[in-house]
Image (tube, rainbow, N blue to C red):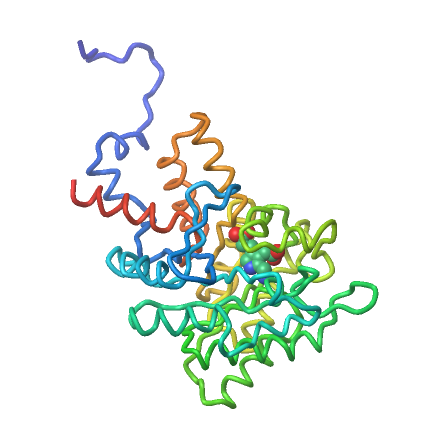
Length: 342
Ligand code: PBG
C-alpha cells in the first residue's frame, strides 16, 4: 500500500540519488567511467625452452610460459581485444652476472620473445621491461659498488643498451622500471639516434619501494638473489606524494610518452593527482601482491573473486588510469566478453 499522505510533517527530499540507481538502464546511463579490454595490458613471465609452462605458487592462476606457448596465448589476447603485452623474462641462473650484461644480449630471452610475438601477431603491442634485476646475481635493478649501492650513471648506460636491443628486436614500447635518474632522457636520445623515432617510452615514473612486489620476485626468480636487501635507495618512499609529481614531470620532460604509477590500489591517490595535474597518458600497475591478495581471499571463499577483480579495475579507471597492467587482464577480458554475449 502506497501512503498518499506523508507519514509525518517532515519534508521528503526533492533530490533522491537513489532514483537513478533504481534500474539497470538508468545506472548504465549515468555511469561515469567505463572499463573495457582496451584498458588492459597483460604482463607475462617468459621461460626458456619449448612447451614449458610453470605455475607461480604465490600467484595462483599465473603461469610462466615458454615463447611458443606465449605466442599461442598472444592469439587469444588479440581475439579478446587486449592491446598489449608486457614481457618479463625468467633468466636462468647461469646467465646472470654482477653487471647484468645478459640484459642487452641480442639473442636474449626477451629479445627472442619480442621477435616471435611481432612475427605472429604484428598488431599486438609489445612492451619490454628495462631494468637489470632479472640479469644480476644480486637482484638489484642496476650495477652495484662494493657496498652494494646501485650506481646511477653506469646503470643508465647499461639500460640504454638494453632498451636499444629491445627496439632492435621490434619492441613497440620500452618501459624502464629501474628508477635511475636521467634514464628516460638517455634512452630517448639513443632511440632517436638509432632512428627509432616511434618507439614509445612507458616510464615507471612513480615506482614505490613496495612490499607488494614479493610474488613477482618469486616469479622471475630474483627474490633469493635480493635476499634481505631492498630497493629503497632508488624506488620511492611510500610516504611521498609531491615527489611522484616531480618524477612524472621530469620523465615527461625527458621524453616519456606514457607514465606509470606502481603499485595500484594502495596508490590511487597518486594516480588521481598525476591525471588531474598533468593530464597525460597515465598507467597503473596492479602488482603481483595485489593479485595475490585478491586470489588468496577468493580461494578462501572470503571474497567473490570476479566481483572484486572488476571492482578493483574500475576503481583504477575512476582514479584516472587510462590503462592498467594486470595479471587479471585475460580473465577480466573473458568475463566482459561473456557478459556482452549473454
Ligand atoms: C623490476 C620490476 C618489478 C616489478 C616490475 N618490474 C619488481 C621490483 O621492482 O622489484 C613488479 C611487478 C609486480 O610486482 O607485479 N624492475
